[in-house]
Length: 320
Image 1 (cartoon, helix red, strand yellow):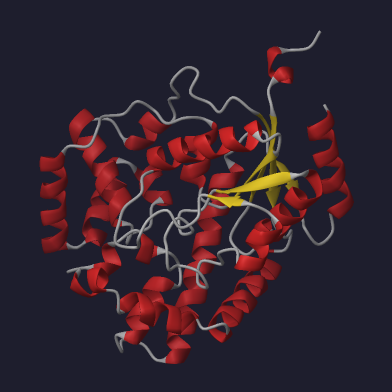
Image 2 (image 1 turned 90 degrees about the horizontal axis):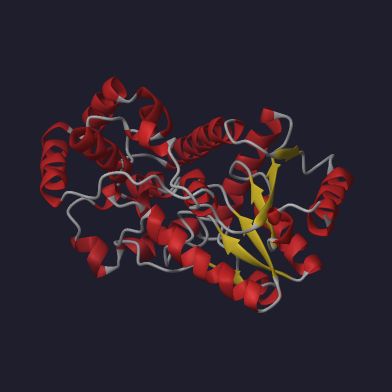
């Protein structure tokens, strides 16, 4: 007997660490299967973050419709809850057109918000946020990250010490409720999941050394494509020029951008800038692997060697 889930619309989710080949695979699958791509990437929502964020170019967007790109200016914020609402609306439009949603990206929080829903944790408290921002101004976000590690080591392990927005939110939730945000996040409101039958495919080279090589090659290609000129253009935007702490903005915490900004401030030479940007990208990949290993129902594939098995998995998922 068919289960109720069998009647749900189908979708593909392409997950994986940075530089693993997710975007190319999503593009190929969407084009072959009559799909449209829903980006699940926290950097791609920002206008002006193109080369350094590996945003699909005009030719790729012409081949396959893309959603969830260029939604905010880089001085604005964008929450996981906002992403989930906007992405659901995009998916509804894709399904209404009789097309296949192909979800692709590497931002675990966005995937969790979209596919599983967010826990009903305490809402934002402006006064407490202002207090935390004041503490950060005096002590630095690294000190607040150390405080988070004492009260919620699980959250601190996946939140970078420079990620002001997420450190602030985690400490806000803990101080308001007395419970770690990681405990809240393990709870899921009933019925909050996405009403789709989603095949979750994880794409990653089996060799970590190969992934590191891909990261280095991609960064060199970004430099050759004009990445530093892109960051110079961002720095010239009046709202960013006037911002008292631009590197605290979520957009500029995207890997590569912080390091490029500091390089253009004269804090590093070209070689050190490249080393730091590549190292930060490798650290991001490590955090993404940690999150992916904890996700149930993932099917893992090496894009270099598992092409046939991947095609079979996609065919099964869409025909079941």
